[in-house]
Amino acid sequence: MGEPRTPRSVGSGDLLEAEWGKHRPAVFGVAYRLLGSVADAEDVAQDVWLRAAEADLRDVNDLRAWLVTVAARRSYDILKSARMRRETYVGPWLPEPLLTGPDASEAVLVDESVGSAMLLIMEELSPPERVAFVLHDVFGLEFGRIADVLSTSTPTARQHASRARRRVTKARQAAPQAPKAERERVLAAFRAAYEAGDLAGLVRLLHPDAVYVTDGGGKVAAARKLIHGGLRVAEVMVRVGRQWRPDRIDVVEVGGELALLFHREGRVYSVDTLQITDGMITAYRRVINPEKLSRL
Image (cartoon, rainbow, N blue to C red; front, top):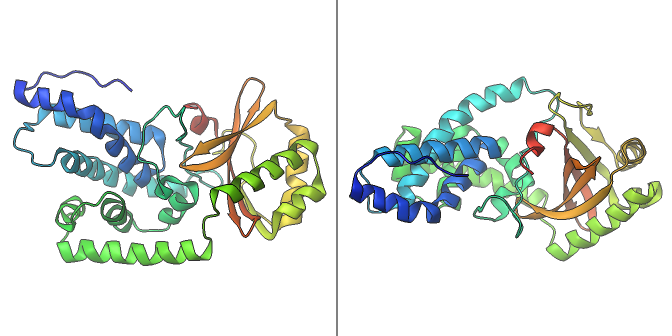
């Protein structure tokens, strides 16, 4: 996304002009990890650019840390209000899909922390815990800077990160991430069964306790409650597949992990991410909210 040019001091302007392209992925990346929204992350990146354009950066020793800190502070403000908006969101909420493969529109620091499973784990953290965890464990910022973002003491910021780390570790252990080769195999088998309307084939791939999550945001028809049970999920998928038959299904990289992108009537219909454990699908998450798909 192009950034507006704002008058600023020559020395500081030259520095920002030279360094912005290198550091923008980190600015966007911290905002997306904290907010789970591409649109909000883009707005934060714009805000950081404007703030940097007005500042004298010549005495800033670590420009990346400075920019990330500004992005985190703005994201923290949004995050606190976003949690209130989540309470009125229609149906289940899922992160906005972010393409991270070679054709991605946004360069981002890709790792497990931008995957849908990880973003949903972080949704369970308090805003201070989420900020402390992302800034320290993902971006390596010292706790003094994190304390400034949270308007708290350094020991308290450290405690927030520690609590978040314990909760994240526990959640990861409960649902470990499948290796890439296993994900490729399961996604290929699922796509074939889905396209064939093969109920038995889908049941074999779904864990008996699998959960199906659909995010329509009240914009399109979608289940507003979680659907539980492998057989029940398979039946729903076969029915939906017949009613809304896709033109094609692509395997893409979303949030650093393989996912399925459904096309229908010349547009992106859904982006589906799968939680796979021991070769079986334990969670199937489908984003069909058109506002979350428009940037794809």
